[in-house]
Length: 153
Image (cartoon, rainbow, N blue to C red; front, side):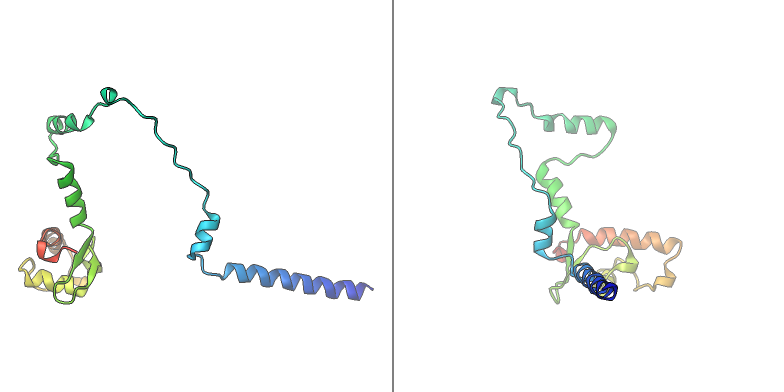
């Protein structure tokens, strides 16, 4: 009788381990998992305010920024446009879109070659050559390259 109980226990433990490893090895990025695990979020509707009570703080922000000495964007469109330019770069020859590199070491090969073609750098540098003054020169070239309209994604 104890032998039969032992066999059932071993089979049960094996089944539990099988189920645990099956769920652990399942890919996490499935849509069902995200929807099933995500807490339900209900957006609360803001209370309606009369038009007289609404004060536009946007008119005060440039004056405050000017007093502090910061350069404020003239309109919200210009601010949004500046953010959009820094999102991705597009290779005009192949149409490949790449994220704007934060570091020269992680830049795609076509970006490095385009920096040389546009005259922003004199040559493509190896990662071992990025020391001292070269690093600053490359950072400035990347910043100017982000602003070129030809490569905007």
